[in-house]
Amino acid sequence: MISFTQAIILGLVQGLTELFPVSSLGHSVLLPGLLGWQINQNAASFLTFLVATHLATALVLFAIYWKDWMKIIGGIFRSIAEREIADPYAKLGWLLVVATIPAGIAGVLFEQQAQNLFASPALAAFFLILNGGLLFGAELLRRRGLRPKELAEAIRVPDTRLASSVTWAQSVKIGCLQIISLIPGFSRTGSTLSGGLLAGLSHEDSLRFSFLLATPIIAAAALLKLPPLLVSGNIPSLETALVGAIAAAVAAYFSAKFLARYFRTKTLTPFAIYCIAIGAISLLILR
Image 1 (spheres, rainbow, N blue to C red):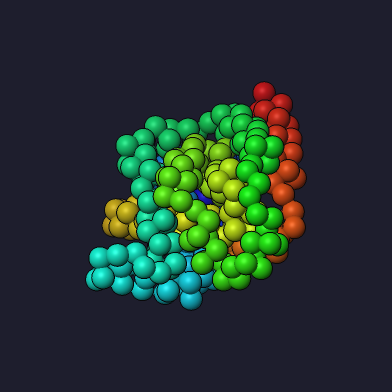
Image 2: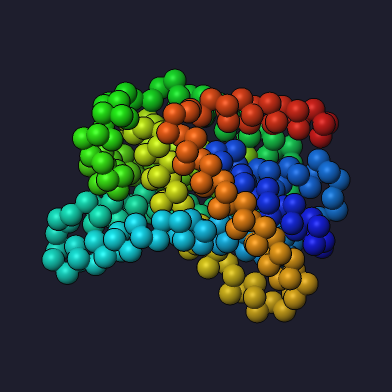
């Protein structure tokens, strides 16, 4: 059973690391193991907790970008009614739909296999090191198109810039990269940021696409899981899940605001170093 103190700590860590490219699942699996907490990470109560904190993060992202989402959703419905994708918001909406499909299918097919990895802090630490390698690789191999400043001056509206910069094939590739975030230790934000950089986007635009893409995939996964958990009658786990969700929401809000400023000028390299260092140190401790 998760205590209220543990719920607050895990919620803050989840809200912080879900949006940072350092793997929230990896930290949620690692932290109890490193601190010696007696938590059954395959139990329904722990799954309820993770679902609630992820849903809280998705709601925060939707609140931050709600004006964009209203335009995107309106664009999708207009494109359906008019049977053509005639404006940037419609195209961006369908790009997000296309990018969501690969991870959605993989989540359904490999849900149990991924969940089995939750009980192995050592594996999470190992995959965290690989996540650091992915971030390093994305920085080394990323495509250089127009410099971010030049592109921003040419197309000042961020969503329009995304719609004009991302192709349908690139959207699929970014969506496929997102699949590895089902493994604890690999970051969803890190994988989609890497995909955006490899597609030639700036760090700032890659982050925006990543955050927009996170909202439906996280929310859909959480909403599919919550109903059966809510009817299970496990009231204590729901109480701690609510406390964790509030903590995650607060951390996610400040994380999103910080990262939006950070990636205007900075790179993934510090996060890559962090993942490799924490993963290696954790492996040594867990031995």
